[in-house]
Length: 347
Image (cartoon, rainbow, N blue to C red; front, side, top):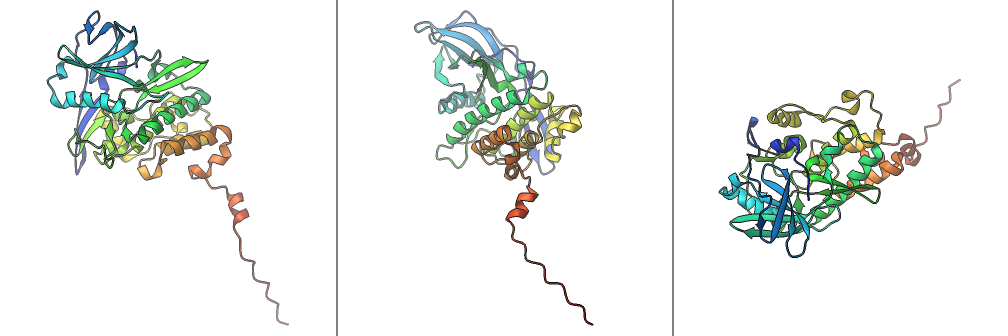
């Protein structure tokens, strides 16, 4: 885990409250001015430089003074250390992230507690956030490669009953490895355990409270309803949309984006970028991820990965999985009754 500060870091988390009338209040928690720990030794790590900052913490490049191992050391923001909920959420991030070990997830090395501070040491990823390479529409082949890698990471996390809840381009780091992109999911700061899991913990948010990043948040998450792993698939759909089109489908203040998600589907690619040419099945794949009703999305990362492979290799074969009926094939297998013989005319 390692990244440069992003322009979007000031809008990492939104907490909103929901009533019967819908989302009525939104609050964006933006990072405050933070102290720079560069040059200090904490918990056996020499902190070299700051590489990122978000709503919950600051990320540094650090090196262990005994082993020389380079890590991304995440420190809770100083203004949050007295916030009991924030501290518990930070500790949970270390607990949750340590459950997963996968090539497409940034792993945790250890939880460091020293000098009255709690820090999380992550593997240091020599890459940049996906945000940095999404400055224009990406080639479909590159989009499908990155999407498949994110899906593999999600499949593993979901198998551990872990829901990310804040999947977005800033939380996907991309390295250049073996002459191609290698994506890794990071930052499980507001992750949660599936409620029906035997490892489920006491929730940190009140009923109806919304936590996440508005643009990438699933509608049910924005509405403060119960969520499951399918919210991560919706968030991925938003990322795929941006990678293919070069811009987001919703714009405005956080509360306006939340309301838009509850009321309408994202515009088609043709509506937002008329000159863009994208394989129709790839757009349908994206829109299935973005279905407002969870039951209409892919039901698992594995299912989405299977269909994406069909879209990449044999688009026509992906049709039935994306809700497109092949009429000719359907008629070929349907046994139609023979028409009655013509009636003889009476003389």
